[in-house]
Length: 291
Ligand SMILES: NC(=O)c1ccc[n+]([C@@H]2O[C@H](COP(=O)([O-])OP(=O)(O)OC[C@H]3O[C@@H](n4cnc5c(N)ncnc54)[C@H](OP(=O)(O)O)[C@@H]3O)[C@@H](O)[C@H]2O)c1
Image (cartoon, rainbow, N blue to C red):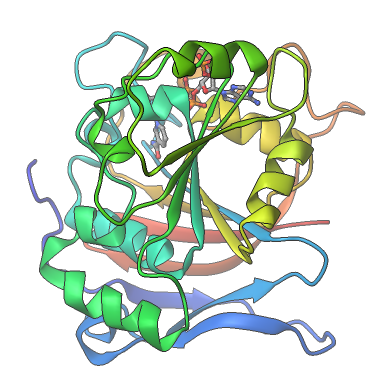
């Protein structure tokens, strides 16, 4: 499956009509030529006035599996997407528009050599992404924010040591104490968030806001995403549907894991479909959550 959907354009199938609303600030627009050849049309993200906009990006199998189990061989996202090159292109585009990429420690641990930049997933387009970010007035690379309660991180992980990629580890007091004993790279800043055993979603958003970010991209995993959803701070979901039945227990491998409770009042979080694209057998769905 290596390189599945290689070089295919993410063809636009459907866009929701623009809702009537007051003028909003936006980031993005038509893409520069080398990127537009793969992604015709525009890509824009609404910028919220009162807080950073939070968008999430996941790939799911047909049976709703987004993650192999902890400790399973091949726990990274490539096993879900079948190493889809078009999915990596979508991932690179969203990283290209983001000020920060927020991940949970489980996601960091699953991809030991991963770096959360566009260039890492699309090296052939590294220059195009760099110049797009310059044109948009963004920093050269998004800041990686890793959320961990335990502080149990491999400080030699590529994603914590990439030149020019600032990293913030948002953690608890206990997590910070653990990290203080380790040789953490100089581009990593450890921030203690709150005084509990978890990092509250609202406090995490304050860390994001403190960096001056307007767009935060959450790349999971399911535990972190579940907490952000429950806190009602996710604005959009970009969801790639990969054409495989993964055959895992969807209860423990599904998109959003909200421990111990549902979203409340017996209902889920509803969203509106914003656009549909396809590249070969991959489907690229964009949803906007209802406020
Ligand atoms: N299909 C996809 O698109 C996709 C995307 C992302 C990830 N994944 C997969 O998802 C799997 C990992 O799943 P996961 O749910 O364990 O991932 P996760 O949410 O990235 O990691 C969970 C861990 O993150 C930390 N964490 C999350 N929220 C926290 C909070 N509010 N406060 C403090 N710490 C918090 C904790 O770390 P500590 O244990 O260090 O305290 C927790 O154990 C991997 O196999 C990965 O490949 C798939």
